[in-house]
Length: 405
Image 1: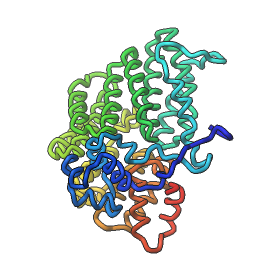
Image 2: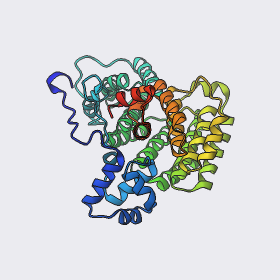
Image 3: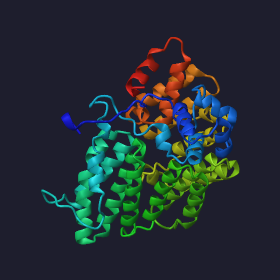
């Protein structure tokens, strides 16, 4: 994807805000604003403000509108967000290679050199997990294709359970990267390949970890209630006598909490969150530090999710109050910290605290620039802030420039 092969096909809609895309899709379906609001079961007043660019679109609103209009959330969000130069578009360069690497799960690819050993590839897996936590997407994308192909050779030719486990891990990372960049079709394929590999990995927790990713894919289509039910079922199926089970149990309840909150089920959301906090408290300290499955099942992540539950429920005062009492450990990943900053930025924007919202967004961009620049909520928040200020503050100007809005 360099030189003459680079062609991001930006089109004329790259700089549109979500509201304008919603309005165009609505008109194509011959629906009035009132008609769409009724069909999507959302506030008519809020829809008019979103379409005019006067209010940011929440993930729940985008999902409801997408379902009502029969389009994807990615279409309304304008994903994937392509760069205007080869340098700013570099994060997408690995996508064709990832597609090729995961095209087939049961036929080994032809490699020019013998695959690295499983010990070496386990090191690559750990490196890839760290890159995802740090939101180093360009480097993660460049690592994944070769590792997936080499592990496919090992797994298919030897049927070694360890090879299948490592392959499932790598495919889950490919899912995470594809999803973050807005390639939801590729994410779905990666998820199915990860599931098939997990079934051969001789680890009872692996299928549950795949279910965690499946919940995120349900998020992509706005099936919050289904995702919540999936996480409830997953939590009940985790065998707590197995190594790392409490990590998986914690993650299932945290994801279930967000799903339930987006579905508007406040009691279920807080119940999930409470059970996650309880599960974290039972994980031995050394195991928390080890982070066996790269799930970040720790007290800091649980606390952040408490704020997010409040945000998704529209309880902004509670979210701000919880945020003010947060003391996050330095071990918490850059991506999780940045995600929290994005959530708080949109919360502060909603309550009219524009300066503080800008500061939190700037912090997110500093912590995890690649993730923030490609995050739909971060981009929508940046656009709203850009429209608000008569004189654009320099920190916001830099963010908007780097997002190429």
